Amino acid sequence: MQIVPMRDLKNTVEIERKCAEENGPVFVTKNGYGRLVVMDIDYYEKTMQSMEEARMVNRGIADYEKGKVADGKSSLKKLREKYDI
Image 1 (cartoon, rainbow, N blue to C red):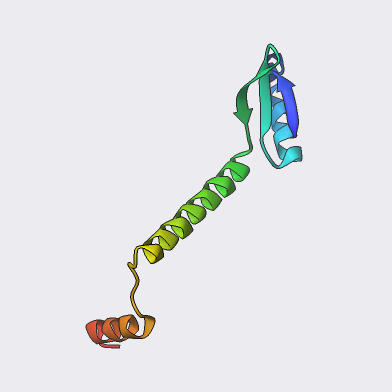
Image 2: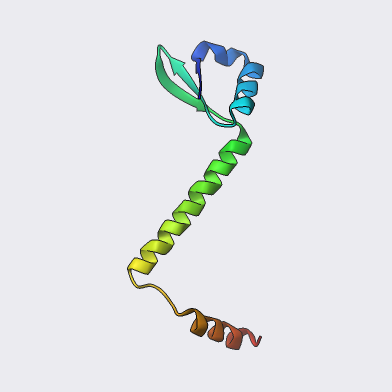
């Protein structure tokens, strides 16, 4: 985990290098307290994708627990009939 003081943000090349090296977030502090998080765009996109996948899985679990499920065979049969395949 990289932690840098706010004044180091002036050196953008170094911050970019730290983000690439860390392959994760770089935490920026001000007066010793966390203020910002800087990260590589690839890491950000992977993180957002993982969060979306987790959200979808949780939605599926919630649907299952509420009984909002359908039998696979009958669902496939309906789709085949509907689309004549």
